Image (cartoon, rainbow, N blue to C red; front, side, top):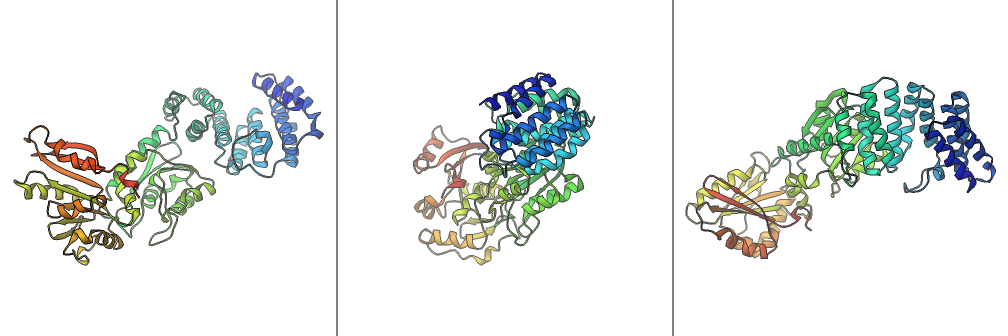
Length: 495
């Protein structure tokens, strides 16, 4: 196709700094205009405008872009594949107006145009969105605004990595000279130096923030059920932490709300890093996704999507409001805290069974096991007594243990779930018969083995359990015993 070849030739001349030749080739391409599809006619005018702007004919470039809107495509396609010229929309044209203004040495005008054009680009078109952010970063750099340039580059980097846009990544690397010494530049260059096959979905700053959010979420264990333990960290435009929060207790503010409150007005245009997809329903507290939208958050980094109706598409709603959303960031690390709550989506609590292997001093060892584990659980079942893991949460007096727990374990667990309990620890050997007969109800087992036990004791103690589908998770030393923890593979997500 002659028009397309001439169009590409104009692009190549422009890339090599030969503006006059680029204008000549763009004008030659326009000779084929009447025979071309409407979006392609718009794309030719966009390229011609670029060449004119580079040649110093700013006003002519702006008029040409105005005329390009007449031929613009009505919408972006459903999928981001394909040539840009096949979906040259009005929003896409305005992004290129910003690019032309930058070429014409009018960076502030370019920034204003790009700020208006960015919301029109669907976030699924990552390459286009990253390119627009790059243009904005370059315009800020040209306007001698290093903070804003670094913030836009910081935003563009993970999106370009996900899109596999080598050109954008190369240009981001070149941008370093314009904002030399800024605090974000080491972060940008560190990411650019990653191996090409490393599909980075979040920046190093965001990964560090996610790990802090996971730590925060653990502070809510034992007090949030039936809600999940969630942590959130807010980063400002430059990637600096300005707010942290976690869900402390059921009925109280969620993690995102607490973090936003701590962040204050600097949250505008920032990033929310959260361990679980923000909720999309209004209950005792407002929907977290709306709080993030109202606060002016520009990007949300999520570790795990919420499989329950509580989430109900919170990430999709954020995207629909023009917020850049990244998911599946450090999910394995998040599941160390959130796993039991996710496992409870099968409508029974996550059940941990812990006991001392040696009968001598077993009561003392079991008591110590209960003390160590109760802070991460809702209920503790010990002999024939039932206690709260953390005082003030789940009113265990409402529960009556059946006479034959082995016969009624499933129905009892369902009753515990219905009252809001999501994690239970059964301590000692008193219920071993019931638990062995219903081993498929047990998700995790912690066994205390004396440090002086003969070699092979641990293997012998766990042999039957591994046959039943448990895997060794870890072995940790205590004061007088070694604790062996086993769990089912992907217990957090088992049906």
